[in-house]
Amino acid sequence: MMKETKIKEKYLWLAVIVVYLTILSTLFMGQPFANQLRDQNVQAVFFLLGMFLVGVAVLLHGLIRKPSGIEYAVLIGIIGVYVMFFFRLGAPERSHLIEYSVLAILLHKAIRRRPKLEGGIWKPALLAWLAGVLLGSLDEGIQYFLPERVFDTEDIIFNSMAITMAIIATMILNWLSKRFRKNRAD
Image (cartoon, rainbow, N blue to C red):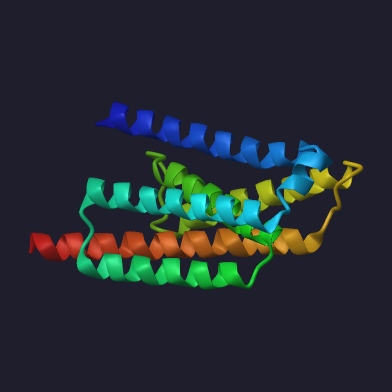
């Protein structure tokens, strides 16, 4: 069991690294290619593809772990909040929301896998939040030195909000899962 946990933890940290490097790679994307992605039709295709992939991930997670009805209801509510939030944002903010939400969830899962980490639910959440905010700030700090990019403190705040939303949603779903798993056993 301990070896399986270590393997899962390694894969989670590898996923964190891949997601973060992907986020950073967008900093060096050429301007002509970036301009192509500003087209509304192209944005719509990428948005729909992204939402489809999130839906597939949620379904796969559900098939692996058989959530209860209340967990599904809360998950649908959380997705609804994210979707409504999406409609109020421009394309760059949408990508920040998706990128840093995924990064925060992976950080939280990887940190929770640490065998000697104690402190209940709050310590892993706080560590994941701090790591996510630091990585988001580093991402924005790098932009200060790039000629075609702009350092923007509002982006740091927005990244932090996305990280906070993702970790809180994860904590709620984890809490519900434990609560209903315990009730099923009784």
